[in-house]
Every structure is written in structure tokens, then in C-alpha cells.
Image 1 (cartoon, rainbow, N blue to C red):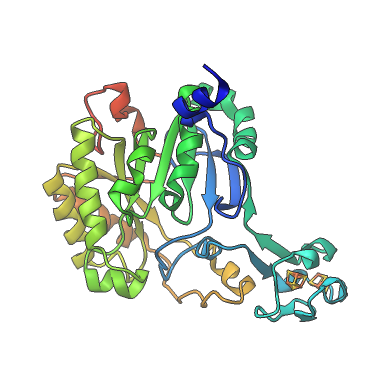
Image 2 (image 1 turned 30 degrees about the vertical axis):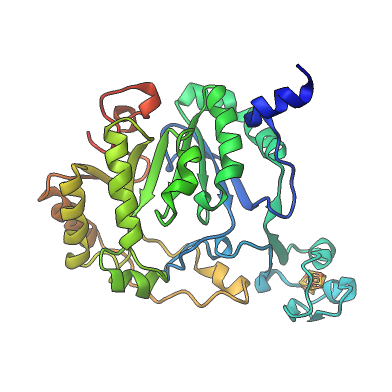
Length: 342
Ligand code: SF4
Ligand code: SF4
């Protein structure tokens, strides 16, 4: 048997080189405690089918690289203007997107990090090299790697390669998803995923379109199918999460809609993710991002009411990082419980 035969028989070992089809990563964060069990690394990909009005990571929306300007750091030195080969940068931190080819020479020239770029293309091998040194920590803490975004399932082939390698090394793999995907396009990825963190937002289709830019019907159908698969141990464990956005997702109608839906599916736990305005300043850095909406701070009473609505359906709510993930395990580990139940 020659090498060609081996390669054909073992496509999982083929290394995806970085090329135009390789997704862009805008951050790799280590030592994270809120996105799955234990201490984790989170890989954030660029590209998302939704445009949630409250989104904390607007740099995750577009698939392509983006140039951003943090005006408060700008020294008006004009190094960026001088470095720009196309003449797109006409004055400090001001550029014409139509003439910009995203060469990022202005970013390299900026002495104050006022100009930054979002989106780096890594081969799977290069990304794996960033995760490998954390193995000891994952193992000691019961943690692993979470692929997030943007929407990680947009890059199913790429992540499947990485996840397969991590799993074969005994490392726990989680995917955070908005739930908007074609199931058949993520089957291979789900087969190498231990935990699906499934974000739910607005129960009404028209409200979901209004605040997130797309309907919720497909998301509900995927959630139902994946909960059923998890219960039959034919897919990853599943845990829903609801961002609590004042005046948007914390209305009684929305909470009762989701509580009834989850209860009918037999799900009896979820995470409530309280809104905070930390990402708002990023909207100012990105010229194409709309301004952040003016939202009231989330009150303790509003959060309490969320708990009460779900409790009325016997669904327990947890804060991020407090979930009893040890109680649910992936189908591959053959535990009794495989979807959000405690
Ligand atoms: S990214 Fe390149 S083309 Fe665009 S403004 Fe900066 S230097 Fe000019
Ligand atoms: S190089 Fe940086 S600090 Fe200098 S003008 Fe441009 S953005 Fe401002």
C-alpha cells in the first residue's frame, strides 16, 4: 500500500492548509470558565448569519477581515496615511472602504495600536499548535476547547478536523451555536462534539427577525431534533442558553414561550446570560457596525422574574460558569443524561 492509498483511507489525517476557504479567527482566549465545563480555550470565528441588535462582538459578524480604529488611542501622527499604498487612508484613522484592499500596512505602521485588524487565517495545524500547550490544564480542570463565533457551524469541515484530533487526544470539545444551520451540513461535526451550547433568543418569529435579522422557525426545529438525538445518545449533549436582554428577551411573553417549548422537549435546565454593555465601544471602532442600542441595565428583579417563569415549568436556571455540566455527558461517553437536566 502506498502513501496515496493511506491518504485516501484516512482523510481525517489530512491537514487543511490555510487558504481562501479557511475561516478567519478573531480571537483565541485561554483560561475561560463560562463556556462549557472546566477551564477552556475558546476559538472565535468570524462570520454569523444573525445580526442580534445587542451583540457584544460585532467584529464577529462579517466573514472577511476588518480594519478598526480606536480613536481614543490615536496620536494623529499620520503614519497610517503615509503607509497606505492605495491612498485609501486619507487622514488619521479615516479610510475609504472602496479603495482599501485590507493589506493592513496601516496597522503595522501605527505606533499606538489605535488601528487594529480583526481576522487571522490559520491552518488547522497552526491553530492546533495554540491549543496543544493547554492540554494539561484542560485535563486537570475537566475542561477543553469551545468553538464559538460568530457562528462556528459555518466552518464545519475545518472545525471537524480540529475536533477529531482533540477528541482522539481525550480533550472535551464544545460548540457554541445560534442554532441556524442545515443539520445535514453539520452531521460530521456533531459526531466529534461532546457538548452543544445552544443559544436561544426570541420565541416569536417576527420578533426574532426584528432583533436578530432572521426567523426562529429553523432554530426551533434544530433544537427539537438535537434534544431528541441527545436523549437517544445519537448526538452531543445539549445545553440551552438565553441572553437576558432588558426589554427584548426578558419580556413575559418571550420567557413563557421558551419555558413552554423547553418543558415540552423535556429540558429542565438552562443558562441565563445577563446582558452587559461591554461590547458597545467596539461599535465605534468598526465603521460599518450600527450603533449599539440604548438598553436599560438589567435589574436583579428582572433576572429573578426570569428564574420564576422557568421555575413554574420545573426548569432550573444557572448563571454562566455555575452549570452542573458534570451531570451531562456526550453520547460517546454513554452516560444516562445527555441533555440539559439536573
Ligand atoms: S488596510 Fe491597506 S489599503 Fe486599507 S487603509 Fe490600511 S494600508 Fe490602506
Ligand atoms: S498611525 Fe495610528 S496613531 Fe498615527 S494617525 Fe494613524 S491611527 Fe493615529
